[in-house]
Image (cartoon, rainbow, N blue to C red; front, side):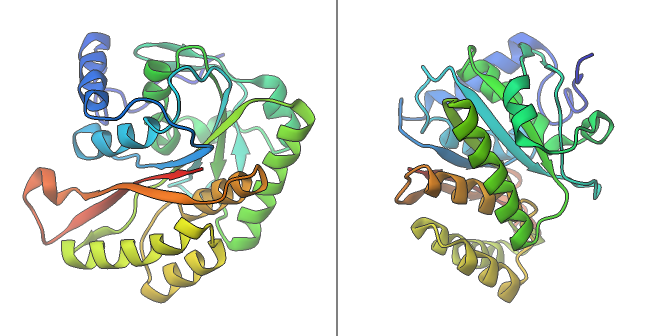
Length: 261
């Protein structure tokens, strides 16, 4: 069994050479290396957010050969679940770290993963940049604060039991289809407490401004795990909107690259 590509040809190129050229272009504008334990990376079409995603992944050393825990929101309201099968990308297959996934003690549901793009869009970046790495795909359907903390605890326990070298990717876009100025104001207001790893204030500000970030739960889980692993701070690497590509400023989607160190 394998999780086959569902959004290749829509969110990113299906042709391997075209995809590789595009990823090379994205990473050519980044600084090499980095020591991030976790990142926030957007999951829109590459034409809109691929450059921001590359900025996030560039904060992890390209020599990393451990396991990426990739946490993405369910856009269809499925339950929290993991995938145990390898994942196909146009650049080759990404192996899943089955032992680590087992230790997460989260229900396996391959059907729910079948069409979800929030995880899939991250996989070509991982395959291209970190060809020896493995993945642990986690879909998050319930994103309230207590659920995010429980997921973080499960990930930390699995890391301690497995002694794996882990990096965590929180897949999230920020404001959806609001005027660009509002998106920037709301998103940067919500992101600010993440820079001091304050996830409770992050949730409060998300609720206060009703920020339509789709992956706030994965972000909180990622930050919490990184903090328990010794992270002290976070950095906003880049913020952008879809309006910068389309020229349409009345309704944009916000994207952020955040690194936790």
